[in-house]
Image (cartoon, rainbow, N blue to C red; front, top):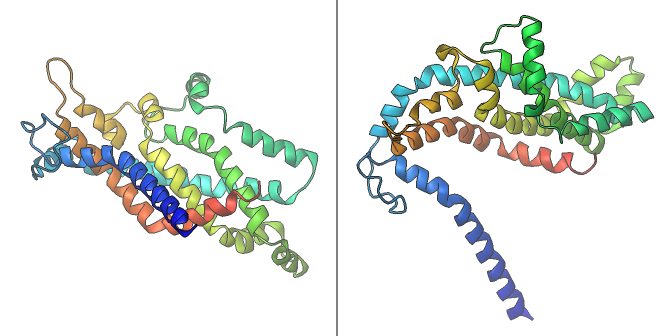
Length: 278
């Protein structure tokens, strides 16, 4: 029996290692290719046979990394801050009020999870034009906030129901605290794991988004990182320099990797707690 369990354990661990290798292989190929010169791109599976940072230097200059990085940072930070303010305020009454209206509104938000934002882009563009809102750096933020609310409200609602005891709020209520004060001073600080989860999941999507930025942003000075990478795509006359494109991909991913490394503990806690009850 012990040998059988040992074999099962080895088999499971081997399967996990194989799964990780399959998922990591594209990332390893990208990193290896980004450290090569343009003349050494014949066999991408010949890993790390050259180490040069010329492609990173070229990518940094051509995509105007500093400007594009700041544009992405502004769009992401404003969108995420607005989501973190609006979503928990919407989730709090949905989690605490138990009537038909709250249940309907909760299902209404859940319905937003199955409707992609791209489907509503045409009427939204027409509405923005009719309201004479100029297209620019801040226009995509409207779409980012709107499309992020269903998932964020769902996560916050489940977390409040499962991890925030009502007794704490009742004690504050007996002390004369109003609903606004109870939420921001007592409930919201307890939502840190869920907040970090929302920040990470939505920031990754907003940071990497290409679609909404391409539709609403027209000026090169306002271009975020995903749009800046378009300049590395070639054509028949000018083939794509894959080493430079891969270097640009790595540069765009580094801020997200750093942020997730710092916040991953809270991310796992928020996802686990938010999925208990919903």
